[in-house]
Length: 178
Image (cartoon, rainbow, N blue to C red):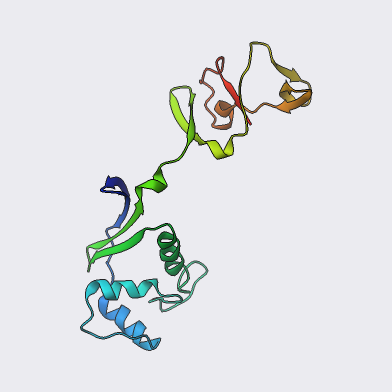
């Protein structure tokens, strides 16, 4: 998988080294389903058929594949965000699926937090309040763990370092987020 910025888009490419898409098989299945198709369609037009609802080339239906559910939903969701999905495939060499999304979707307001040597960005829409606590404001209560008294209510404190299983992280200068 590869992700990069190109023009005004974020591009995500997923590549496999499998058999690639089988043009003849896709056209045959499309004809079986009564879809409008013909042999002179461009490759891009043929590949686009796999995004039709219920389309599948599988001979057998299993618990995880062959029902033709999924690619139409993927395309619809990408398009609803103003993006597009493209397929590049070579028979017996593999397939690359490229998803292009507007760069504006990759920009969000967030708070940068550090846990040990790692840095994370938490979306501001998930944060109700941020506090810098004075030493000793976090108390340990038997049976409840660590808590902080905020405006008369004792609220649990969950260390991001503990949650991410990073025991080596220094939490002495931690912020508490709600």
